Length: 303
Image 1 (cartoon, rainbow, N blue to C red):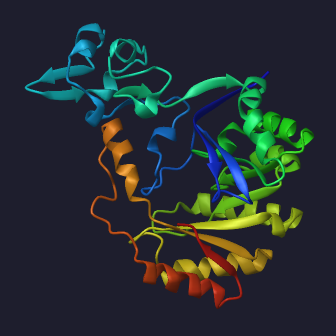
Image 2 (image 1 turned 120 degrees about the vertical axis):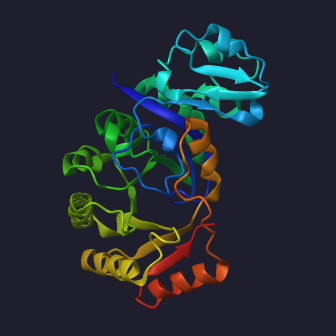
């Protein structure tokens, strides 16, 4: 039985695919987008996360860490993330942490390895409740990174009559798409031209969109985050429209920039790349939506 690595589950979402969904967030991503809202999902194993607001500065982690990762001095807790060997000793001893609840702890690893069958049994009670009004959406990171194990999970879902959606940047080799294709009912494809794009990623994305559209363009929804200074250009919108028209894709979801991800960068000891960027206004979002609707595309703003 194959293993999947995930870092979170949302048990009730109305904005991540048709109807009401369970959303499973997998670890691993081949991109490093400056606007990424989950940098802790980039690697196949989570880095040590430190959330200062939950820390009591007790110093227990300093004494137990074998590699000198932690230092508490004058009420300040410093974390040398590069020294961490993932032993977890600091998390286990921390009075403000639970090894199984990283998102409410001062210290934690955002990830869990689990067998596919065990994971499905975890998801199944909620999926059964949503069976006729939604289904399972798999996001990330990028789910294509774990395509082999994910195909096994989605195959079980398909056999059980569960509607499946996969959200991906679609920039990995087409073999990852082909492994999942028989078991995916709907695709959410991140299409957001920006100045940070690599040519090879863009070419692979277009190739994968063509592959999926040849299978069924009505099973594809484009997703475009509006990131000031990166993806909010008329040239970018025109490129998206061109790709959608060429492939017979009719629907796009416009996602406002998420300003709440800075906390995760700080928890990883990283500088937040979008510091100071302002949220697009409602008027700006409505104007962007109008660009697509005037081109005959069904556009929706996801708040």
